[in-house]
Image (cartoon, rainbow, N blue to C red):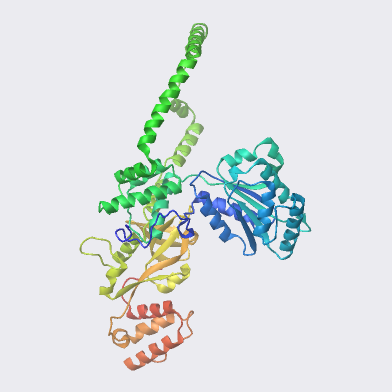
Length: 544
């Protein structure tokens, strides 16, 4: 396949519902949070609807992972059952014997006893019905009756109905008025928007190991139009597009490649021809059937217009909007305020916000941020290509990735690449070059931004990467480090390590002290910081 050609560790658009590749957009995040809060306790009926291919199945998998551990999940994938089969399926999935010879009343009694034992043991029972738009009216009513089973602690079972938009229409029937009143939460998954498609494709490529942009902006736009934003179709088209680009030995997927992939996956040419023929056929039938009514309507409209023109005054004073605005100072002030709020570039403040948001959207790749960090150290590749961590070995430097809070960045005392997420949970990256209690300095793209520390705490994802000095193979610590720098390094970490250096008179004392420190230390991150600060090379983090 194409994995090695695009530097991928695995297939990024495999059709299997993999939780690692699940893109949590704003819509998915809201649905997951709503369902988790309602299904974590007994007595809830919830509805999850969305078009085919929008990711309902994978969201349900994410939901199951987020529910409490003491949760009995019963999944029903086939909606073609009757009330008797529904009860029997729930009992059998819970380990209770249920036969076809038992009546609904007997099965209901068994279910009540099962639920009472489960509630006493602290177990929450949730039944998930997939493809629920195919459930019969009798089964929907039976679900309502089961959900009404109560014990000493209240209702004892949850139901989650997952289906397409037809599910909402089914339960809105007059016969299901009581069922509709029992539903506690309605969650809907919509197709992805254009910006979300761009983030979705980049997210899956990065998760598969490719951190460089492969799909062009025009390719993403055509992908969005051709798939209507449905993740399942996006996966099929994007996978086919990567195959086509690999066969042509092209490192980027263009808009033309996406069009070819859509033709293969969706058969757009034949569907388009059929659609055009059907449209003209329906329009022709409608015109011939309703032509007399259209002619009569046009005649009546002409007569009414003529009468209005003759008998009603038609000479009216007209004023432009600008004339009305200039006539009143209060109106003009409010008009200018509204324009300032709506137009991003009208004021300096709005222009800065628009430029900052643009920089965030352009900082989606960690490889770009690593290249910027290397330039902050004063290095760049002679061939003009982006620098990577692998290029640092020859300079006695190395990249280290740490999962710590922002306070640990001050301990490192180096410019770092921060992993960040915006309010839509889309990852982006920035180089932090300065920080204090109030504000921080970030480099995104070719711009330096001052942001509030509170904003940085809000978007920080818990991981950062920095560059530190290291010793060459065969070099000795005592030959490359001065006692003064070594003592300063230990003193800067006095709150994190209990080791304090003794009096150092010569290189032998220096070596023995460092060896003793390594014996007592159990933190590799602190060991690397001590060595880096002792070597005392390269830029430091600005304290502002």
